[in-house]
Image (cartoon, rainbow, N blue to C red):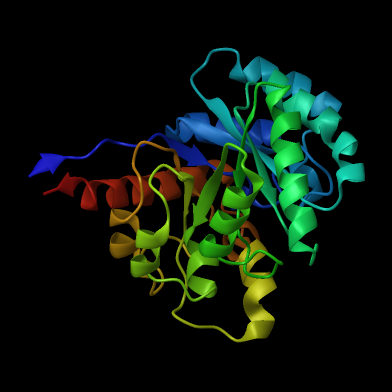
Length: 273
């Protein structure tokens, strides 16, 4: 048996819900995370999380020591070709803060052919700012599964990766066996979270944006799902917990707790035959 690569670990923006980006960076640094994601494209789920011009200056100062780096820039919907130029300010801002990857999803567009075209064009646009592109399937959206997302990437002909979010994957009915159908090297970002095995459909959105469970609190087969994941890409925690925030658990405390749980999963899945 050999020990697998240890991934870089990211505190993703949604985890701390209504938290300023500068405070997210501070919490990540205090806890010991390597990376953060930043919400640069409006509208954010939580208004406080958006990187405004004023916030960008403070974020840049906090990032200057290089202890915490920015990875993913959130989030760009694949709507129409005409909308792409609207994304330039956010892409420029995110790249200036050191971001490396723009995150896209297809939330509302039912026209697969158009989405393929927009995805290819977005990848070109992002590359102008030195950014890679990752596509995230979201269970409430038009591109809901890893298989559907992989098909879009193949059809686009673009160098686009996939984001493997355990919550969206499980809620879309995915199992570890499904990952064998994804081409090696296509998954380029992993988001970790937990949940009950099944929930009513009306709870999908509230759970997604506000009450995902921390690793070990739920019933997802986390070790199995993560043993099938690549380790030479970032692993991020994305576990919004309003029940914690609403009783005064600080962002730093949430970051410390989630990093410990994420490190435990990294250790549990570290050995390869």
